[in-house]
Length: 623
Ligand code: ADP
Ligand code: MG
Image (cartoon, rainbow, N blue to C red; front, top):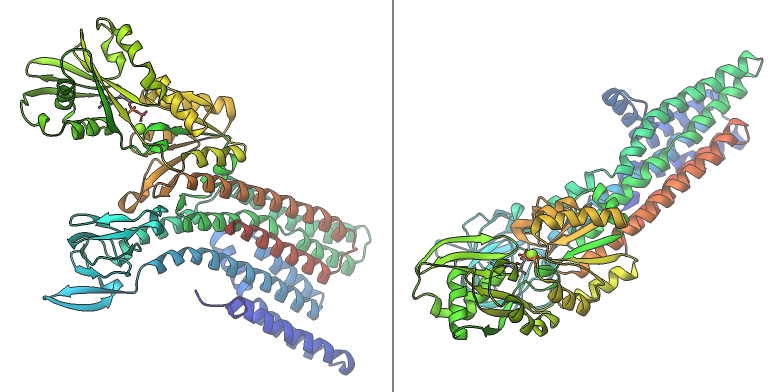
Protein backbone atom coordinates (compact mmCIF):
# COMPACT_ATOMS: atom_id res chain seq x y z
CA UNK A 1 0.00 0.00 0.00
CA UNK A 2 2.83 2.36 0.85
CA UNK A 3 3.83 2.70 -2.76
CA UNK A 4 0.38 2.54 -4.36
CA UNK A 5 -0.62 5.64 -6.31
CA UNK A 6 -4.16 6.88 -5.98
CA UNK A 7 -5.48 5.69 -9.34
CA UNK A 8 -4.22 2.19 -8.62
CA UNK A 9 -6.00 1.95 -5.31
CA UNK A 10 -8.68 -0.75 -5.80
CA UNK A 11 -11.93 1.16 -5.27
CA UNK A 12 -10.66 4.24 -7.13
CA UNK A 13 -9.30 2.19 -10.00
CA UNK A 14 -12.56 0.30 -10.41
CA UNK A 15 -14.56 3.50 -10.35
CA UNK A 16 -12.30 5.06 -12.99
CA UNK A 17 -12.53 2.07 -15.30
CA UNK A 18 -16.25 1.92 -14.80
CA UNK A 19 -16.67 5.65 -15.43
CA UNK A 20 -14.76 5.40 -18.70
CA UNK A 21 -16.93 2.52 -19.87
CA UNK A 22 -20.10 4.33 -18.85
CA UNK A 23 -19.09 7.32 -20.90
CA UNK A 24 -18.21 5.14 -23.88
CA UNK A 25 -21.50 3.25 -23.71
CA UNK A 26 -23.45 6.46 -23.26
CA UNK A 27 -21.90 7.95 -26.41
CA UNK A 28 -22.56 4.79 -28.40
CA UNK A 29 -26.10 4.39 -27.10
CA UNK A 30 -27.17 7.75 -28.46
CA UNK A 31 -26.96 6.94 -32.17
CA UNK A 32 -27.42 3.16 -31.83
CA UNK A 33 -30.45 3.20 -29.51
CA UNK A 34 -29.98 -0.27 -27.95
CA UNK A 35 -32.98 -2.05 -26.37
CA UNK A 36 -33.72 -1.18 -22.75
CA UNK A 37 -32.75 -4.58 -21.39
CA UNK A 38 -29.26 -4.15 -22.87
CA UNK A 39 -28.90 -0.71 -21.36
CA UNK A 40 -30.03 -2.09 -17.99
CA UNK A 41 -27.53 -4.95 -18.09
CA UNK A 42 -24.60 -2.75 -19.10
CA UNK A 43 -25.28 0.11 -16.71
CA UNK A 44 -26.03 -2.17 -13.78
CA UNK A 45 -22.85 -4.16 -14.36
CA UNK A 46 -20.82 -0.98 -14.52
CA UNK A 47 -22.56 0.32 -11.39
CA UNK A 48 -21.57 -2.88 -9.65
CA UNK A 49 -17.98 -2.59 -10.83
CA UNK A 50 -17.57 1.00 -9.68
CA UNK A 51 -19.75 0.79 -6.60
CA UNK A 52 -19.16 -2.72 -5.31
CA UNK A 53 -16.85 -1.55 -2.57
CA UNK A 54 -19.21 0.94 -0.97
CA UNK A 55 -22.32 -1.17 -1.53
CA UNK A 56 -20.70 -4.05 0.28
CA UNK A 57 -19.72 -1.68 3.07
CA UNK A 58 -23.25 -0.31 3.26
CA UNK A 59 -24.64 -3.77 3.88
CA UNK A 60 -21.90 -4.82 6.31
CA UNK A 61 -22.00 -1.60 8.29
CA UNK A 62 -25.75 -1.64 8.60
CA UNK A 63 -25.80 -5.25 9.75
CA UNK A 64 -23.01 -4.63 12.24
CA UNK A 65 -24.03 -1.31 13.73
CA UNK A 66 -27.76 -1.52 13.12
CA UNK A 67 -27.85 2.18 12.40
CA UNK A 68 -28.72 4.20 9.38
CA UNK A 69 -25.46 5.34 7.83
CA UNK A 70 -24.60 7.36 4.76
CA UNK A 71 -23.72 4.35 2.64
CA UNK A 72 -27.17 2.99 3.35
CA UNK A 73 -28.81 6.26 2.29
CA UNK A 74 -26.97 5.97 -1.01
CA UNK A 75 -27.96 2.36 -1.43
CA UNK A 76 -31.61 3.29 -0.89
CA UNK A 77 -31.21 6.00 -3.54
CA UNK A 78 -29.84 3.40 -5.95
CA UNK A 79 -32.76 1.06 -5.24
CA UNK A 80 -35.17 3.93 -5.77
CA UNK A 81 -33.60 4.66 -9.13
CA UNK A 82 -33.92 1.00 -10.04
CA UNK A 83 -37.66 1.16 -9.38
CA UNK A 84 -37.80 4.18 -11.69
CA UNK A 85 -35.82 2.14 -14.23
CA UNK A 86 -33.29 4.89 -14.85
CA UNK A 87 -30.25 2.69 -15.40
CA UNK A 88 -27.88 5.38 -16.55
CA UNK A 89 -28.38 7.41 -13.40
CA UNK A 90 -27.79 4.36 -11.23
CA UNK A 91 -24.42 3.93 -12.90
CA UNK A 92 -23.49 7.59 -12.48
CA UNK A 93 -24.45 7.68 -8.80
CA UNK A 94 -22.73 4.40 -7.93
CA UNK A 95 -19.55 5.25 -9.72
CA UNK A 96 -19.15 8.85 -8.64
CA UNK A 97 -19.94 8.02 -5.06
CA UNK A 98 -17.56 5.06 -5.29
CA UNK A 99 -14.79 7.25 -6.67
CA UNK A 100 -15.22 9.85 -3.95
CA UNK A 101 -15.34 7.26 -1.18
CA UNK A 102 -12.32 5.50 -2.63
CA UNK A 103 -10.29 8.69 -2.85
CA UNK A 104 -11.24 9.55 0.68
CA UNK A 105 -10.19 6.15 1.95
CA UNK A 106 -6.99 6.42 0.01
CA UNK A 107 -6.27 9.81 1.61
CA UNK A 108 -6.85 8.30 5.05
CA UNK A 109 -4.58 5.34 4.48
CA UNK A 110 -1.85 7.42 2.93
CA UNK A 111 -1.92 9.98 5.71
CA UNK A 112 -1.77 7.28 8.35
CA UNK A 113 1.08 5.55 6.64
CA UNK A 114 3.12 8.72 6.33
CA UNK A 115 3.98 8.34 10.01
CA UNK A 116 5.82 5.17 9.10
CA UNK A 117 8.37 7.27 7.26
CA UNK A 118 9.92 7.75 10.68
CA UNK A 119 10.88 4.09 10.63
CA UNK A 120 12.98 4.67 7.53
CA UNK A 121 15.50 6.30 9.84
CA UNK A 122 16.58 2.90 11.07
CA UNK A 123 18.77 0.82 8.80
CA UNK A 124 17.37 -2.35 7.28
CA UNK A 125 20.31 -4.46 8.42
CA UNK A 126 22.50 -4.84 11.50
CA UNK A 127 26.05 -6.12 11.88
CA UNK A 128 25.77 -8.62 14.71
CA UNK A 129 28.51 -10.53 16.44
CA UNK A 130 27.47 -14.15 16.88
CA UNK A 131 29.87 -16.86 18.03
CA UNK A 132 32.70 -14.35 17.76
CA UNK A 133 31.99 -13.69 14.09
CA UNK A 134 30.45 -10.64 12.57
CA UNK A 135 27.52 -11.17 10.28
CA UNK A 136 24.88 -9.06 8.68
CA UNK A 137 21.27 -9.82 9.59
CA UNK A 138 18.00 -8.09 8.86
CA UNK A 139 17.23 -5.53 11.56
CA UNK A 140 13.97 -7.33 12.38
CA UNK A 141 15.95 -10.37 13.42
CA UNK A 142 17.78 -8.55 16.21
CA UNK A 143 17.11 -9.98 19.64
CA UNK A 144 17.51 -8.37 23.03
CA UNK A 145 21.05 -9.10 24.21
CA UNK A 146 22.53 -9.28 20.71
CA UNK A 147 25.76 -7.37 20.29
CA UNK A 148 25.99 -5.31 17.11
CA UNK A 149 28.50 -2.93 15.60
CA UNK A 150 27.73 0.56 14.40
CA UNK A 151 30.42 1.96 12.13
CA UNK A 152 31.10 5.61 11.34
CA UNK A 153 28.33 7.10 9.23
CA UNK A 154 25.88 4.31 9.99
CA UNK A 155 22.67 4.74 11.91
CA UNK A 156 21.69 2.69 14.92
CA UNK A 157 19.35 -0.24 14.11
CA UNK A 158 17.76 -0.56 17.56
CA UNK A 159 18.07 0.79 21.12
CA UNK A 160 21.02 -0.46 23.09
CA UNK A 161 23.81 0.13 25.58
CA UNK A 162 27.33 0.84 24.35
CA UNK A 163 29.69 -1.87 25.59
CA UNK A 164 32.78 -0.79 23.70
CA UNK A 165 33.98 2.18 21.75
CA UNK A 166 33.59 5.91 21.79
CA UNK A 167 31.87 8.19 19.35
CA UNK A 168 29.66 11.17 18.76
CA UNK A 169 26.07 10.50 17.79
CA UNK A 170 23.62 12.79 16.06
CA UNK A 171 20.33 12.35 17.91
CA UNK A 172 18.55 15.17 16.11
CA UNK A 173 16.19 12.71 14.45
CA UNK A 174 14.56 12.01 17.77
CA UNK A 175 15.51 14.94 19.97
CA UNK A 176 15.61 17.82 17.52
CA UNK A 177 18.89 18.90 19.14
CA UNK A 178 21.56 19.55 16.57
CA UNK A 179 24.44 19.15 19.03
CA UNK A 180 26.25 15.82 18.79
CA UNK A 181 26.05 13.64 21.87
CA UNK A 182 29.08 11.81 23.20
CA UNK A 183 28.67 8.07 23.64
CA UNK A 184 31.00 5.78 25.53
CA UNK A 185 30.77 2.53 27.46
CA UNK A 186 27.47 2.44 29.35
CA UNK A 187 25.75 5.14 27.26
CA UNK A 188 22.32 4.49 25.80
CA UNK A 189 21.95 4.79 22.05
CA UNK A 190 18.60 5.01 20.28
CA UNK A 191 17.25 3.51 17.11
CA UNK A 192 17.44 5.83 14.13
CA UNK A 193 20.20 8.08 15.47
CA UNK A 194 23.28 8.63 13.33
CA UNK A 195 26.76 7.61 14.43
CA UNK A 196 29.59 9.94 13.50
CA UNK A 197 33.30 9.16 13.44
CA UNK A 198 33.84 6.39 16.03
CA UNK A 199 32.77 2.75 15.95
CA UNK A 200 30.50 1.45 18.69
CA UNK A 201 29.78 -2.01 19.96
CA UNK A 202 26.26 -2.04 21.31
CA UNK A 203 24.18 -4.56 23.22
CA UNK A 204 20.56 -4.46 22.08
CA UNK A 205 18.00 -3.67 24.79
CA UNK A 206 14.98 -3.75 22.49
CA UNK A 207 13.94 -5.60 19.38
CA UNK A 208 13.37 -3.77 16.15
CA UNK A 209 9.59 -3.79 16.60
CA UNK A 210 9.80 -2.47 20.13
CA UNK A 211 12.53 0.11 19.95
CA UNK A 212 11.94 3.73 20.85
CA UNK A 213 11.22 4.78 17.30
CA UNK A 214 8.75 1.96 16.73
CA UNK A 215 7.04 2.91 19.99
CA UNK A 216 6.72 6.48 18.83
CA UNK A 217 5.17 5.39 15.55
CA UNK A 218 2.80 3.08 17.38
CA UNK A 219 1.78 5.85 19.74
CA UNK A 220 1.06 8.24 16.89
CA UNK A 221 -1.01 5.65 15.07
CA UNK A 222 -3.03 5.03 18.20
CA UNK A 223 -3.49 8.75 18.72
CA UNK A 224 -4.79 9.23 15.19
CA UNK A 225 -7.67 6.92 16.06
CA UNK A 226 -8.68 8.81 19.17
CA UNK A 227 -11.58 11.07 18.41
CA UNK A 228 -11.86 14.75 19.10
CA UNK A 229 -14.90 16.19 20.82
CA UNK A 230 -16.09 17.74 17.57
CA UNK A 231 -15.78 14.37 15.91
CA UNK A 232 -17.85 12.74 18.62
CA UNK A 233 -20.41 15.52 18.35
CA UNK A 234 -20.66 15.24 14.57
CA UNK A 235 -21.07 11.47 14.85
CA UNK A 236 -23.80 11.89 17.40
CA UNK A 237 -25.48 14.40 15.12
CA UNK A 238 -25.15 12.00 12.18
CA UNK A 239 -26.88 9.29 14.14
CA UNK A 240 -29.97 11.46 14.44
CA UNK A 241 -29.65 13.23 11.12
CA UNK A 242 -29.29 10.23 8.81
CA UNK A 243 -32.56 8.56 9.84
CA UNK A 244 -34.23 11.95 9.46
CA UNK A 245 -32.97 12.18 5.90
CA UNK A 246 -34.50 8.80 5.19
CA UNK A 247 -37.78 9.84 6.77
CA UNK A 248 -37.70 13.12 4.85
CA UNK A 249 -37.24 11.27 1.58
CA UNK A 250 -40.13 9.00 2.46
CA UNK A 251 -42.33 11.98 3.30
CA UNK A 252 -41.38 13.62 0.03
CA UNK A 253 -42.47 10.50 -1.80
CA UNK A 254 -45.73 9.90 0.05
CA UNK A 255 -47.22 13.22 1.10
CA UNK A 256 -47.43 15.06 -2.26
CA UNK A 257 -48.75 11.97 -4.07
CA UNK A 258 -51.54 11.67 -1.50
CA UNK A 259 -52.59 15.14 -2.59
CA UNK A 260 -52.56 14.21 -6.22
CA UNK A 261 -48.92 14.78 -7.15
CA UNK A 262 -47.24 12.63 -9.75
CA UNK A 263 -45.53 9.60 -8.22
CA UNK A 264 -42.60 9.61 -10.61
CA UNK A 265 -41.92 13.32 -10.14
CA UNK A 266 -41.91 13.06 -6.35
CA UNK A 267 -40.03 9.79 -6.30
CA UNK A 268 -37.29 11.52 -8.25
CA UNK A 269 -37.26 14.45 -5.88
CA UNK A 270 -37.13 12.10 -2.91
CA UNK A 271 -34.08 10.39 -4.39
CA UNK A 272 -32.35 13.65 -5.22
CA UNK A 273 -33.09 14.75 -1.68
CA UNK A 274 -31.51 11.57 -0.29
CA UNK A 275 -28.30 12.24 -2.16
CA UNK A 276 -28.20 15.97 -1.58
CA UNK A 277 -28.93 15.75 2.13
CA UNK A 278 -26.36 13.03 2.94
CA UNK A 279 -23.82 14.53 5.34
CA UNK A 280 -20.73 13.02 3.66
CA UNK A 281 -18.56 16.15 3.73
CA UNK A 282 -19.66 16.95 7.23
CA UNK A 283 -18.74 13.56 8.60
CA UNK A 284 -15.37 13.47 6.90
CA UNK A 285 -14.33 17.03 7.84
CA UNK A 286 -12.96 16.39 11.28
CA UNK A 287 -11.39 12.92 11.20
CA UNK A 288 -9.28 13.62 8.13
CA UNK A 289 -7.98 16.79 9.78
CA UNK A 290 -7.16 14.98 13.00
CA UNK A 291 -5.27 12.24 11.23
CA UNK A 292 -3.35 14.68 9.07
CA UNK A 293 -2.45 17.01 11.93
CA UNK A 294 -1.54 14.32 14.46
CA UNK A 295 0.57 12.63 11.80
CA UNK A 296 2.40 15.81 10.91
CA UNK A 297 3.06 16.63 14.56
CA UNK A 298 4.35 13.10 15.10
CA UNK A 299 6.80 13.35 12.26
CA UNK A 300 8.14 16.50 13.90
CA UNK A 301 8.59 14.73 17.24
CA UNK A 302 5.46 16.14 18.83
CA UNK A 303 3.26 13.31 20.04
CA UNK A 304 -0.29 14.58 20.36
CA UNK A 305 -2.13 11.77 22.06
CA UNK A 306 -5.46 12.06 20.31
CA UNK A 307 -7.95 14.29 18.56
CA UNK A 308 -9.22 15.78 21.77
CA UNK A 309 -5.79 17.05 22.73
CA UNK A 310 -5.22 18.38 19.24
CA UNK A 311 -8.45 20.30 19.52
CA UNK A 312 -7.45 21.69 22.92
CA UNK A 313 -4.04 22.71 21.58
CA UNK A 314 -5.86 24.79 19.02
CA UNK A 315 -7.76 26.63 21.76
CA UNK A 316 -4.87 27.38 24.11
CA UNK A 317 -4.87 30.96 25.39
CA UNK A 318 -2.09 30.76 27.96
CA UNK A 319 0.94 28.55 28.44
CA UNK A 320 2.24 27.96 31.95
CA UNK A 321 5.85 26.94 31.99
CA UNK A 322 8.02 25.50 34.71
CA UNK A 323 11.29 27.34 35.24
CA UNK A 324 13.78 24.74 36.37
CA UNK A 325 14.53 22.20 33.72
CA UNK A 326 12.07 23.68 31.24
CA UNK A 327 13.12 27.28 30.64
CA UNK A 328 16.52 26.47 32.03
CA UNK A 329 18.66 23.48 31.24
CA UNK A 330 17.95 21.97 34.64
CA UNK A 331 21.65 21.42 35.28
CA UNK A 332 22.55 24.14 37.76
CA UNK A 333 26.14 24.78 38.71
CA UNK A 334 27.52 26.38 41.86
CA UNK A 335 28.93 29.78 40.98
CA UNK A 336 29.74 30.98 44.48
CA UNK A 337 29.56 30.37 48.20
CA UNK A 338 28.94 33.06 50.81
CA UNK A 339 29.89 32.26 54.41
CA UNK A 340 28.29 34.18 57.26
CA UNK A 341 30.01 32.00 59.83
CA UNK A 342 33.18 29.97 59.40
CA UNK A 343 34.79 29.12 56.08
CA UNK A 344 33.15 28.80 52.70
CA UNK A 345 34.36 25.23 52.38
CA UNK A 346 32.55 24.31 55.57
CA UNK A 347 29.30 25.72 54.26
CA UNK A 348 29.68 23.67 51.11
CA UNK A 349 30.64 20.54 53.00
CA UNK A 350 27.67 20.71 55.37
CA UNK A 351 25.31 21.34 52.49
CA UNK A 352 26.66 18.38 50.64
CA UNK A 353 26.41 16.06 53.61
CA UNK A 354 22.74 16.93 54.00
CA UNK A 355 22.04 16.67 50.29
CA UNK A 356 23.95 13.47 49.68
CA UNK A 357 20.86 11.33 49.28
CA UNK A 358 18.74 13.92 47.53
CA UNK A 359 18.25 13.70 43.82
CA UNK A 360 17.16 17.28 43.32
CA UNK A 361 19.25 18.99 40.62
CA UNK A 362 20.39 21.64 43.11
CA UNK A 363 21.57 18.93 45.49
CA UNK A 364 23.50 17.26 42.72
CA UNK A 365 25.18 20.51 41.76
CA UNK A 366 26.18 21.17 45.35
CA UNK A 367 27.66 17.72 45.85
CA UNK A 368 29.46 17.90 42.56
CA UNK A 369 31.11 21.15 43.58
CA UNK A 370 31.91 19.90 47.08
CA UNK A 371 33.68 16.92 45.57
CA UNK A 372 35.47 14.58 47.84
CA UNK A 373 35.27 16.63 51.05
CA UNK A 374 31.82 15.21 51.28
CA UNK A 375 32.86 11.60 51.47
CA UNK A 376 34.75 11.96 54.74
CA UNK A 377 33.16 12.81 58.10
CA UNK A 378 29.90 11.33 57.07
CA UNK A 379 27.76 10.56 60.08
CA UNK A 380 24.47 11.40 58.41
CA UNK A 381 21.13 10.43 59.91
CA UNK A 382 17.42 11.13 59.36
CA UNK A 383 17.73 12.59 55.87
CA UNK A 384 14.46 13.98 54.66
CA UNK A 385 13.54 15.76 51.47
CA UNK A 386 11.36 18.82 52.05
CA UNK A 387 9.55 19.03 48.74
CA UNK A 388 9.58 22.48 47.26
CA UNK A 389 11.80 23.75 50.06
CA UNK A 390 15.01 21.80 50.47
CA UNK A 391 16.31 19.02 52.64
CA UNK A 392 17.16 18.27 56.26
CA UNK A 393 19.45 15.74 57.95
CA UNK A 394 21.39 15.21 61.16
CA UNK A 395 25.11 15.61 60.54
CA UNK A 396 27.31 14.49 63.41
CA UNK A 397 24.41 14.96 65.81
CA UNK A 398 23.30 18.43 64.72
CA UNK A 399 20.21 18.99 62.57
CA UNK A 400 21.04 21.00 59.46
CA UNK A 401 18.71 22.47 56.91
CA UNK A 402 19.59 23.22 53.32
CA UNK A 403 17.25 25.12 51.05
CA UNK A 404 15.02 28.15 50.84
CA UNK A 405 15.16 30.97 53.35
CA UNK A 406 11.70 29.98 54.52
CA UNK A 407 13.26 27.03 56.33
CA UNK A 408 15.08 29.42 58.66
CA UNK A 409 12.20 31.44 60.05
CA UNK A 410 13.72 31.48 63.56
CA UNK A 411 17.26 32.23 62.50
CA UNK A 412 19.03 35.30 63.89
CA UNK A 413 19.86 38.24 61.65
CA UNK A 414 17.94 36.63 58.83
CA UNK A 415 16.89 39.86 57.16
CA UNK A 416 20.36 41.38 57.39
CA UNK A 417 21.94 38.38 55.72
CA UNK A 418 19.29 38.30 53.06
CA UNK A 419 19.84 41.94 52.20
CA UNK A 420 23.45 41.17 51.34
CA UNK A 421 22.37 38.68 48.72
CA UNK A 422 19.78 40.68 46.81
CA UNK A 423 22.10 41.33 43.88
CA UNK A 424 22.52 37.60 43.22
CA UNK A 425 18.78 37.19 42.95
CA UNK A 426 18.56 40.14 40.61
CA UNK A 427 20.96 38.27 38.33
CA UNK A 428 18.61 35.32 38.23
CA UNK A 429 20.71 33.13 40.46
CA UNK A 430 19.25 30.66 42.92
CA UNK A 431 20.27 30.83 46.56
CA UNK A 432 20.42 27.80 48.78
CA UNK A 433 20.86 28.51 52.47
CA UNK A 434 22.73 26.24 54.86
CA UNK A 435 22.42 26.18 58.62
CA UNK A 436 20.58 25.04 61.72
CA UNK A 437 17.15 26.28 62.69
CA UNK A 438 18.71 29.06 64.77
CA UNK A 439 21.70 30.06 62.79
CA UNK A 440 22.46 30.41 59.09
CA UNK A 441 26.01 29.40 58.19
CA UNK A 442 25.97 30.71 54.67
CA UNK A 443 24.48 30.48 51.24
CA UNK A 444 25.37 28.73 48.05
CA UNK A 445 24.83 30.60 44.81
CA UNK A 446 23.75 28.52 41.85
CA UNK A 447 23.14 29.34 38.27
CA UNK A 448 21.13 27.34 35.82
CA UNK A 449 21.82 28.18 32.22
CA UNK A 450 18.86 29.20 30.11
CA UNK A 451 17.89 26.94 27.27
CA UNK A 452 19.04 28.50 24.04
CA UNK A 453 15.53 28.42 22.58
CA UNK A 454 13.72 29.85 25.62
CA UNK A 455 13.45 33.37 24.19
CA UNK A 456 12.31 32.14 20.81
CA UNK A 457 9.70 30.00 22.52
CA UNK A 458 8.19 32.95 24.38
CA UNK A 459 8.33 35.14 21.28
CA UNK A 460 6.73 32.46 19.12
CA UNK A 461 3.84 32.12 21.54
CA UNK A 462 3.36 35.87 21.77
CA UNK A 463 3.19 36.13 17.98
CA UNK A 464 0.36 33.64 18.10
CA UNK A 465 -1.39 35.75 20.71
CA UNK A 466 -0.71 33.27 23.49
CA UNK A 467 0.50 34.50 26.88
CA UNK A 468 3.31 32.74 28.74
CA UNK A 469 3.36 32.52 32.53
CA UNK A 470 6.25 31.18 34.58
CA UNK A 471 5.51 28.87 37.49
CA UNK A 472 8.33 28.17 39.88
CA UNK A 473 9.18 27.08 43.39
CA UNK A 474 12.13 29.42 43.37
CA UNK A 475 12.03 32.87 45.00
CA UNK A 476 10.38 35.81 43.33
CA UNK A 477 13.46 37.94 42.63
CA UNK A 478 15.37 35.12 40.94
CA UNK A 479 12.32 34.08 38.99
CA UNK A 480 11.64 37.64 37.82
CA UNK A 481 15.21 38.10 36.68
CA UNK A 482 15.00 34.97 34.55
CA UNK A 483 11.55 35.87 33.27
CA UNK A 484 12.88 39.19 32.11
CA UNK A 485 15.73 37.50 30.26
CA UNK A 486 13.38 35.32 28.28
CA UNK A 487 10.63 37.90 27.83
CA UNK A 488 7.98 36.50 30.18
CA UNK A 489 5.85 39.18 31.80
CA UNK A 490 3.93 37.17 34.35
CA UNK A 491 5.62 35.19 37.11
CA UNK A 492 4.17 33.04 39.85
CA UNK A 493 6.97 32.24 42.29
CA UNK A 494 7.48 30.48 45.62
CA UNK A 495 5.06 27.75 44.65
CA UNK A 496 5.01 24.35 46.23
CA UNK A 497 4.38 21.54 43.75
CA UNK A 498 0.70 21.25 44.70
CA UNK A 499 0.28 25.02 44.46
CA UNK A 500 1.29 24.90 40.81
CA UNK A 501 -1.84 22.88 40.26
CA UNK A 502 -3.95 25.56 41.96
CA UNK A 503 -2.34 28.22 39.78
CA UNK A 504 -3.31 26.32 36.66
CA UNK A 505 -6.93 26.46 37.79
CA UNK A 506 -6.59 30.18 38.41
CA UNK A 507 -5.08 30.74 34.97
CA UNK A 508 -7.97 28.86 33.42
CA UNK A 509 -10.45 31.21 35.08
CA UNK A 510 -8.50 34.23 33.93
CA UNK A 511 -7.57 33.29 30.36
CA UNK A 512 -9.39 30.17 29.23
CA UNK A 513 -7.73 27.04 27.93
CA UNK A 514 -4.37 26.44 29.66
CA UNK A 515 -1.39 24.42 28.51
CA UNK A 516 1.34 23.50 30.95
CA UNK A 517 4.87 22.70 29.85
CA UNK A 518 6.93 20.75 32.33
CA UNK A 519 9.24 17.82 32.70
CA UNK A 520 6.63 15.18 33.36
CA UNK A 521 8.15 14.03 36.63
CA UNK A 522 8.03 16.85 39.20
CA UNK A 523 5.27 18.64 37.43
CA UNK A 524 2.91 15.71 37.05
CA UNK A 525 0.00 17.21 39.06
CA UNK A 526 0.14 20.51 37.20
CA UNK A 527 0.43 18.73 33.85
CA UNK A 528 -2.60 16.66 34.69
CA UNK A 529 -4.59 19.71 35.80
CA UNK A 530 -3.89 21.69 32.63
CA UNK A 531 -6.22 21.34 29.65
CA UNK A 532 -3.17 20.29 27.70
CA UNK A 533 -0.20 18.89 29.60
CA UNK A 534 2.93 19.08 27.48
CA UNK A 535 5.89 17.05 28.68
CA UNK A 536 9.39 17.67 27.39
CA UNK A 537 12.33 15.32 27.15
CA UNK A 538 10.44 12.18 26.45
CA UNK A 539 12.81 9.89 24.71
CA UNK A 540 13.08 6.17 24.35
CA UNK A 541 11.35 4.39 27.17
CA UNK A 542 9.59 7.46 28.51
CA UNK A 543 7.65 8.13 25.38
CA UNK A 544 4.38 7.14 26.94
CA UNK A 545 4.49 9.65 29.83
CA UNK A 546 1.07 9.05 31.31
CA UNK A 547 0.32 12.49 32.68
CA UNK A 548 1.05 14.28 29.42
CA UNK A 549 -1.45 14.94 26.67
CA UNK A 550 1.34 15.98 24.37
CA UNK A 551 4.80 14.48 24.66
CA UNK A 552 7.72 16.17 22.98
CA UNK A 553 10.43 13.80 21.89
CA UNK A 554 13.67 15.42 22.94
CA UNK A 555 13.73 18.75 24.68
CA UNK A 556 13.22 21.40 22.12
CA UNK A 557 11.02 24.20 23.44
CA UNK A 558 10.27 25.54 19.98
CA UNK A 559 8.42 22.30 19.32
CA UNK A 560 5.85 23.47 21.82
CA UNK A 561 5.23 26.45 19.55
CA UNK A 562 4.95 24.11 16.57
CA UNK A 563 2.50 21.95 18.49
CA UNK A 564 0.27 24.96 19.13
CA UNK A 565 0.56 26.06 15.52
CA UNK A 566 -0.50 22.64 14.29
CA UNK A 567 -3.40 22.63 16.74
CA UNK A 568 -4.53 26.10 15.69
CA UNK A 569 -4.31 25.28 12.02
CA UNK A 570 -6.27 22.05 12.50
CA UNK A 571 -8.90 24.01 14.37
CA UNK A 572 -9.20 26.58 11.60
CA UNK A 573 -9.51 23.85 9.00
CA UNK A 574 -12.12 21.96 11.01
CA UNK A 575 -14.23 25.08 11.42
CA UNK A 576 -13.93 25.90 7.70
CA UNK A 577 -14.93 22.37 6.79
CA UNK A 578 -17.91 22.32 9.11
CA UNK A 579 -19.14 25.63 7.74
CA UNK A 580 -18.54 24.61 4.18
CA UNK A 581 -20.32 21.30 4.48
CA UNK A 582 -23.24 22.79 6.37
CA UNK A 583 -23.54 25.51 3.71
CA UNK A 584 -23.50 22.93 0.93
CA UNK A 585 -26.34 21.06 2.58
CA UNK A 586 -28.25 24.29 3.13
CA UNK A 587 -28.07 25.05 -0.59
CA UNK A 588 -28.56 21.55 -2.02
CA UNK A 589 -31.46 20.43 0.13
CA UNK A 590 -33.97 23.16 -0.90
CA UNK A 591 -32.94 22.80 -4.54
CA UNK A 592 -33.63 19.08 -4.27
CA UNK A 593 -37.02 19.60 -2.69
CA UNK A 594 -38.14 22.15 -5.29
CA UNK A 595 -37.03 19.89 -8.07
CA UNK A 596 -34.44 22.23 -9.56
CA UNK A 597 -31.64 19.68 -9.13
CA UNK A 598 -31.14 16.64 -11.33
CA UNK A 599 -29.79 13.40 -9.91
CA UNK A 600 -26.52 13.75 -11.76
CA UNK A 601 -25.89 17.33 -10.68
CA UNK A 602 -26.80 16.45 -7.08
CA UNK A 603 -24.29 13.60 -7.13
CA UNK A 604 -21.57 15.66 -8.74
CA UNK A 605 -21.90 18.61 -6.37
CA UNK A 606 -22.17 16.30 -3.42
CA UNK A 607 -19.04 14.30 -4.27
CA UNK A 608 -17.03 17.35 -5.21
CA UNK A 609 -17.88 19.00 -1.91
CA UNK A 610 -16.80 15.87 -0.08
CA UNK A 611 -13.47 15.86 -1.87
CA UNK A 612 -12.99 19.56 -1.19
CA UNK A 613 -13.46 18.86 2.53
CA UNK A 614 -10.91 16.05 2.34
CA UNK A 615 -8.35 18.15 0.47
CA UNK A 616 -8.83 20.99 2.91
CA UNK A 617 -8.39 18.58 5.82
CA UNK A 618 -5.17 17.27 4.31
CA UNK A 619 -3.71 20.77 4.51
CA UNK A 620 -3.29 20.09 8.23
CA UNK A 621 -0.45 17.75 7.34
CA UNK A 622 1.56 20.51 5.70
CA UNK A 623 3.30 23.51 7.20
P1 ADP B 1 11.06 24.39 40.63
O1 ADP B 1 9.67 24.85 40.78
O2 ADP B 1 11.93 25.53 40.21
O3 ADP B 1 11.20 23.21 39.73
P2 ADP B 1 11.27 22.92 43.21
O4 ADP B 1 9.80 22.85 43.47
O5 ADP B 1 11.97 21.64 42.97
O6 ADP B 1 11.65 23.98 42.07
O7 ADP B 1 11.96 23.64 44.44
C1 ADP B 1 11.63 24.96 44.77
C2 ADP B 1 12.77 25.60 45.49
O8 ADP B 1 13.03 24.91 46.70
C3 ADP B 1 14.07 25.59 44.72
O9 ADP B 1 14.22 26.70 43.91
C4 ADP B 1 15.09 25.60 45.85
O10 ADP B 1 15.32 26.92 46.27
C5 ADP B 1 14.41 24.83 46.96
N1 ADP B 1 14.79 23.43 47.01
C6 ADP B 1 14.02 22.37 46.74
N2 ADP B 1 14.68 21.21 46.93
C7 ADP B 1 15.92 21.54 47.32
C8 ADP B 1 17.09 20.80 47.67
N3 ADP B 1 17.13 19.47 47.67
N4 ADP B 1 18.19 21.50 48.01
C9 ADP B 1 18.17 22.83 48.02
N5 ADP B 1 17.11 23.59 47.71
C10 ADP B 1 15.99 22.96 47.37
MG1 MG C 1 11.04 21.53 38.33
